[in-house]
Image (tube, rainbow, N blue to C red):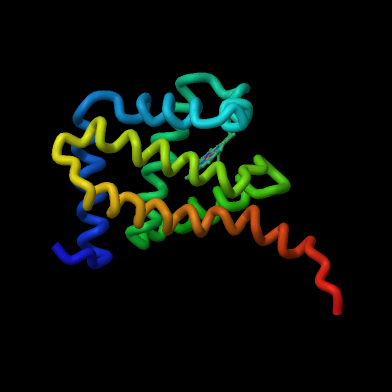
Length: 149
Ligand code: HEM
């Protein structure tokens, strides 16, 4: 099947549905993400287990909504770009790669119809939202960088 935007979104949407119906995909993601780096665990040290699970599920839902061009998804990701920026939660750019890698390792464990093309579709969809949120960290860096005339 050709990888048009519509196909990619449909592949992810169905894969996510299968994952949610097969075991606790959010808990697997939670474990993989939190153990991916001590820095990530440190960021969440004051967040209780249930809240972390809820946040991860909510965050994932928003990323999917955003990639579909959904208005609510766009508005929410704009807010997250601000809350996760350098001056607030200070989520560094490489944390998003850890987040994505943890999720890409989680999907094959819960999607019974998993195939490499499905992983590629997830990668594409997640990268759209990540590129957008990461600007919250990078923009400030650029503003602070003094360019000699
Ligand atoms: C990749 C997409 C991500 C999405 C969509 C997302 C979404 C969210 C949302 C909805 C919240 C609730 C507060 C708010 O609305 O701002 C939140 C809080 C938080 N996020 Fe993210 N997040 C993402 C990535 C990350 C990453 C990579 C980290 C790295 C450690 C992170 C760390 C946190 C922390 C520390 C909080 C606050 C927890 C608390 O309130 O106890 N997030 N996130």
